[in-house]
Length: 114
Image (tube, rainbow, N blue to C red; front, side):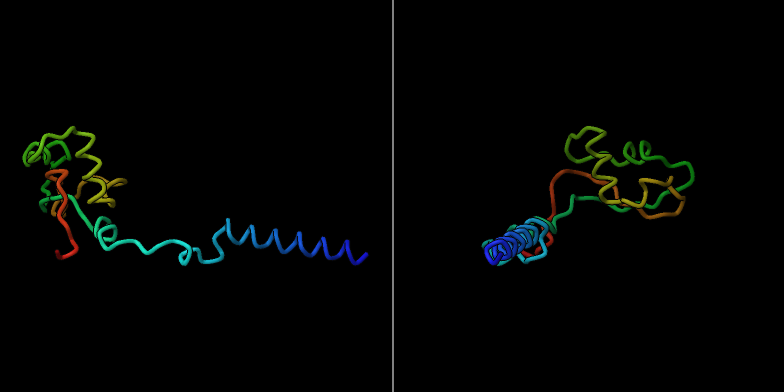
């Protein structure tokens, strides 16, 4: 009977440890080397853009036509950058008088201060 209870206890402890490691309840940060500062700076980069104020009748197509991109890029690529810069516009139309950001290129500005 002792052997049975000991086996059940070991299996239960092994199961709990496995679940903790796979589900992330135990901090795994100590198991990985620290990331370099450059990787942190990559996350803080933004595409180059200009800020414009919309007027009545503006559409995304008309704004892209008035302010062409510095580098050649396709409309879907530029639209993707547009929605990254203006996520609130994904489910609403352009409102006259609103300031929005128009992407100009894929080149990124480094926001790390280097």
